[in-house]
Length: 348
Ligand code: SF4
Image (cartoon, rainbow, N blue to C red; front, side):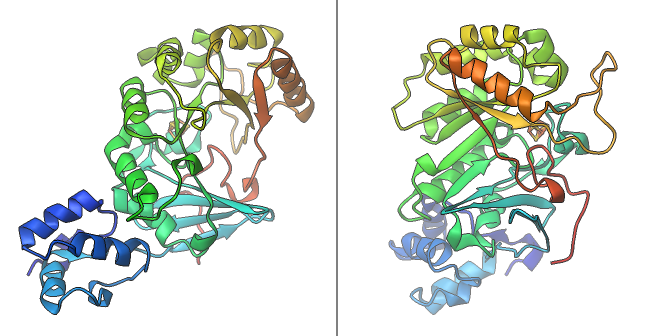
């Protein structure tokens, strides 16, 4: 028998991965579907609880595998009902209830390599990729699990920089042998990693959100180092050439910074840039914290006022670009957009 610390987690495996386990351990043909049902429908916490597997099958599984689910160790609750959870090994997720829906904001990495200038996670540096099981554990072990209706891959990390794990986690979330959610309930957000976008569009049917923040190359480069490697125009060409079914959505995330990216020129250039793409722009309030982040010329990044955001929205709508303003949630517990990082914790 393997030492417990060297055993692999069973939770997070896809059906085809479990079929490979079955073949290797010479288990009965129907075992993978039985295990999937125990993991993703019955929510058991130990292999011994999978009672329709033979004792021998459970023994063989226990020799090499552990369950791999972990409850959260810390939580902070916002006055607006948003909760920020911390799961081992340092994974933050935000639970965001809103009337009859509840969204879970999932992390895919600990820290991030992308270094976006406005983001706390980016400042934390990169500590590692999450496995599919660690991504899914944020849902499975969430106290409010049964209330979740939607998922956004917008927590810590760049999802397309850990695409194998993200795609496996989506397979478990959307398969009928898994959690059985519709892909239209899932949105994956990216800064625009071009090879990852192409593969994500081909291999998944979930919604795509791209962080845009400025239509002008030089300005976007000031905010997002990725612009130098994958200019957003090339990203948009790939999106434009992809044949989206009606129910699949593309949106562009746009943090509005005072005096920086909400002028009439920005509206005109956005209209030109997004021509031919059926999409919407999501305007996001900037959640500054601590020392203001400065652009290379020394100017601080500041949040636009409500009035400026509304004006910008009106101008974009007039240009025919469907534009919404995202509600700010969980700002007081640092669970709002761009605020996730494992800096502050509160005991559960
Ligand atoms: S905004 Fe997203 S991609 Fe950019 S540094 Fe933060 S977590 Fe990474």
